[in-house]
Amino acid sequence: MNQDCIQTWVIEAIQTVAPEIEANTINPDAELREECDIDSMDFLNFLSALKTSSGVSIPEADYSKVNTLNKMLQYLREKNE
Image (cartoon, rainbow, N blue to C red; front, side, top):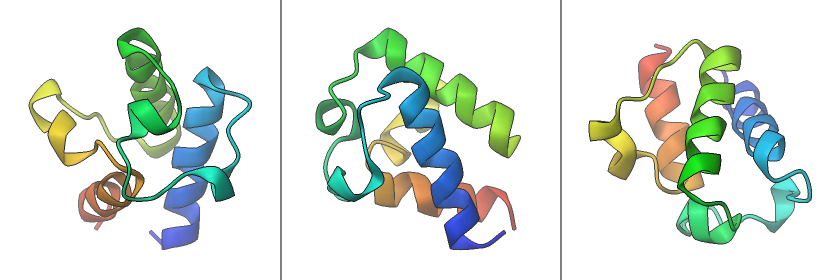
């Protein structure tokens, strides 16, 4: 899976819970929840939307591995290889 496709999945999933967020405004190394101003319920909804588009389920034990945009992209790349 290519990087652009994975990034599109992530941005579209973020926009399901925070429609005002634009891809170019996200600091790729910042904490996603803080950067996008989403609470824990929105984060779960974001992960659910991401699972729908990518087919990847992210267990709670891996949340620290996906807490920034860059980490999320790396995680999804590894899971889609």
